[in-house]
Structure formats: C-alpha cells, structure tokens
Amino acid sequence: MTDNVDVWYFMIPIAMVFVGLALVLFFWSVKSDQFEDLDRHGSSILFDDDKSSHQEAQTHPEQKAASQLSQNKDDHDHSA
Image 1 (cartoon, rainbow, N blue to C red):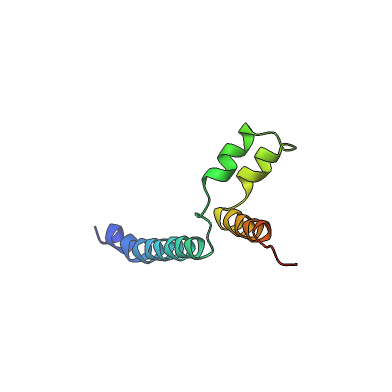
Image 2 (cartoon, rainbow, N blue to C red):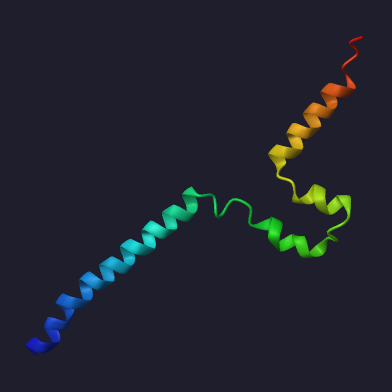
C-alpha cells in the first residue's frame, strides 16, 4: 500500500509544474496579442488577393480610421 502512495509524491509536483507552465504560456499569449484578430485569417479565404476589397478587409480598424481621417483632412484643406 505504501508503494502506491509514494507515486503521488512524484506525480503531484510534476502536475503542478505542467499547470504552471500552461498558465505562463496562456498569459504570455494574451499579453502578446495572439487573440486580438481571430476573424481576419478565417475570412481571408473568401476574398481574392488582388482585389481592393480584400486589401481593405485586411486592414485593422485603427488603420482604416487613421487613413480616412487623413483623407478627409486633405479633402477639406482649402489653403492656398
């Protein structure tokens, strides 16, 4: 009976190391933005690469807003 108990003294620390490693890897992936844009790669197969609609769909919303803002600024600039 004591032989079966001795195995747990070895298995529990090994399991704790694996759980700790999994937590470290999970928090690293969240911190490095691995889960930010999950839809872009899934929908990329629906578009042709050479079409402008595909290139527009692949840009991030922040980039779209910045380019639209600069375009609107240029359109409304009436300086001589």
